[in-house]
Image 1: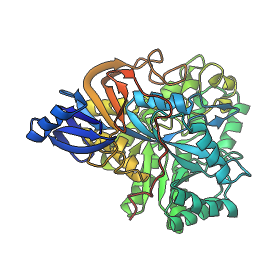
Image 2 (image 1 turned 90 degrees about the horizontal axis):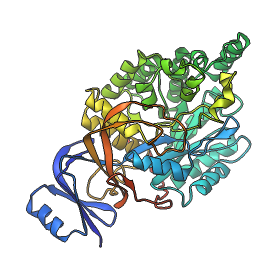
Image 3 (image 1 turned 180 degrees about the vertical axis):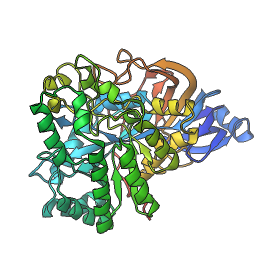
Length: 468
């Protein structure tokens, strides 16, 4: 039986900060003991491998609950495959992703899910699971939702945006929510009023407003707030829980806060791009703003304070990346002269843990809250806890040794995502991933990748652990 001891570090979970040593056996956390105790000393003498974490944090591997590897969009595909994307995630201290399988219109959910099983099989460097995008709500797909929940695909994403592609009307959304209320599934919502947005897009292009910055202007904050409010009310009618993805605006946070004060099962996610970037980036000259086109869009900088506040007050519970990278050359450039043709999405799966640690450094969140929003809560929200998201006996040994004092400068020249730019180019950060274990196997060892495609296992999920 292989034994690894991680000694001398500060173990940080969502609940505790402890100077303890960690014993790993056969890919799982076997025990914790005070550093220097007789138990810990005995472990070290019998270990196959001892890792010295003195002066470092020992944290759970990150759980990124919102990624899009190889997603087809706008006539092209997201540039990260499951192999390249999960490798980059490991470099950034994330050891589990939940990607979105896509149902195409006119097809069964099963066809979409099987396609994602095939794409990811034997490709992933870390563990992975799937949500299901519902593009076509009908009697057949509603029945399939029950089967998927039983199979461990327990969350379903719907869109009030992208008419003709992913859009569902209020009746379809209500019917899917009613089904989820019965089978224990969690409805995830991309909340923007896509019908109204399409009108504003048409008007902007007709008036010659074609640059990337207009992508943000037509996707108005009030259209995010309206769709958030509307889908919360539909969830109330259905008696279903609701998880609003990539919340970007203060007004949308207010809608979620109001619902939660009423005791409703309504949850919110935001992403690093909304915490650190803004419409100033969308307005960068020479079409550079196209690098920052995503939906929901980047907002004026003043919205960032409301998002950080929502994370502190638990009105927003999760930070995921919505990682959906498209290269600037040859992909983002498809929208030159027409911002509506720029593929929507940004890279970030490698940067999330470091960016959120910067929030700790700057006093915006505590260390334990960092772990809560990046590891523990996404694991609980999507039925992976305590297998994932914590360091405790019985948990998978997904463990990161993190150097809180190391300094780094983010750059496309040094990142590992399969994309030709960094959304955070030149940003200086304090803190860096040093070593990463995935189920007890070293995948990043002192800043070198030692993992391999196929190590990652598919994980069937339980249901949301926050429902009341």
